[in-house]
Length: 363
Image (cartoon, rainbow, N blue to C red; front, side, top):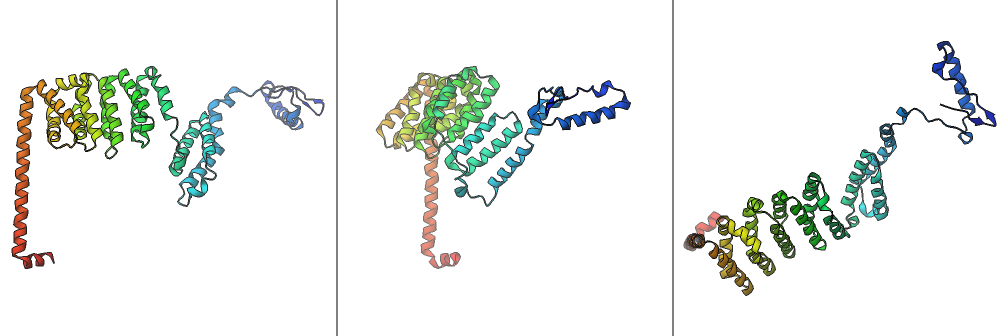
């Protein structure tokens, strides 16, 4: 709709609306309106503007139409990144940190489709340009997070813990931010103790196999988790948990074995063990008893004897049963080894007695 508009020092005539004139005059009036629009098309002379009807400028319509041209750009760029001929060494001159920061600013878009394009684009960029993956500041961000966890809604908090925080244990640079990460995990468990089982199982899943210093970090965090674990939640994970602790006690790395055995100096953990000794002692006993005789470190010997003594004081009969069972298994293993050795001796004797037969069979 056009009101009184000046163009070339000439006032436009205010014409009636089409709906206000008879049908026979509507065509003539429409032509007059078009002529006035052409004559007064210079927007620099616009004096007054009446906005169009609200239904035309609905937000959803604007959002749907705003990405039309940008879609081609995103799709073209993604095709460029995913091309088999793409060479990161050449492209890194143009796809640098500044470019990534500009992409991150575009996440402020109100269009969810554009944000989805940006997510995919950044994922491809980080996959191609490893040097753009910066981890500085994670510890500080986790420290801030730890102070506001209690205000998180339950369901989003659970998803964030399981999908975001726990996978951070897989990163090689864990030592940079592990104290803050462990603190956040413990805060979540203090808020909702029913999360103990998925958290412990995730830690056991991500448990390092060949990185002893990282294994010590996991043991530190696991003890902090057990300190806030209720007995009803403890029983759900105690068997796989102590199977892992038994492996740690048998570790040839002194610090790993020592850190695992320090659990027996924790009064609360000992109370949990005491309540479930019938399940835990059979798991731990073989590792403790075997390493008490074979481990090369005297400090480890002392810690193992302390753990065995505590188990014996908890339940003497169970301790004796485990001792007898272990010795029976040990004797059985020795007999098995003896049979295998005798079999190999027979094979060697046959080979010496009939070298030609053996040679024919080999050829």
